[in-house]
Image (cartoon, rainbow, N blue to C red; front, side, top):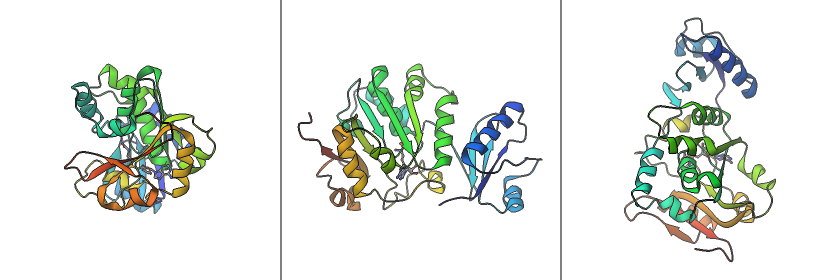
Amino acid sequence: MQATYVVTTGHRSGAPELELAARLSLWLGVPLVPRRGLSIPALINKYKISGVLVVSNRRVSFFCNGEELFWHPSMAKLRIKEIKAGKTDWMIEAMGLQPGGWVLDCTLGLGTDAIVASFVVGNQGRVVGVESSPVLAVLVQHGLKTYRDHVSRELLAAMARIEVVCADHLSYLKNLASESFDVVYFDPMFRKPLQKSKAIGPVRLVANPAPLSIQAVEEAIRVARRRVVMKETRDSGEFARLGFTRVLGGKYSPVAYGIIEKKGGTD
Ligand SMILES: C[S@@+](CC[C@H](N)C(=O)[O-])C[C@H]1O[C@@H](n2cnc3c(N)ncnc32)[C@H](O)[C@@H]1O
């Protein structure tokens, strides 16, 4: 959904929040409006809009359809803990990721997968995340830089390493040199959403719902040195449609990872 929205501040915000709100409204190209004690529904009614981006002294949130979307590390903390305990992370397995690797995440979303990849590649590696929704790009960029609630040093370092780009992945891929990243990764909005997924719920308000294009996969194959990986539900038909012949994942999980291996790529 392409929301029409405005930017404002929280009820108790000061000069720094106003300054950030002004910068974001300029960058997003949407109006900055004074809060003046108004509730979110009152703002929506007053300006005839569908969403409000609020810069408060706690965080930046997007309110829409009665829901609040804000950045948090989601499952990244737990997944990193499990990787450290020697458990298999199927995304990392599918990527064949090693320290020092370069990953291009073409569907950044809130960046959970990118954080896990960034943790694994470490400080010698590189993770670039591309997100086409400007609201999501703002939330993830700001969250990765400012979120500090019970964050370990290694999580913080993994978050800080991610380079956020707001762009459509096809145009971004077209401008990259061949074989410039080890792995190119896609996690598009599922064709058949999993009702159980709470984490993705509010993301749907602003995410780009388009299916992954064959053209984007072809460009990804050119840009990847080793592998192109896509996350999808097993029964979506997307792996076959897009040419992902090898599929990995947990036995009981509805979600799996398709792999396209470059010729001469290592396992
Ligand atoms: C399922 S979410 C990704 C979740 C992410 N892997 C995570 O761990 O948080 C898919 C994201 O891809 C973005 N997206 C979809 N098509 C895109 C495109 N053509 N270019 C860039 N981003 C795109 C959507 O806006 C959405 O935020």
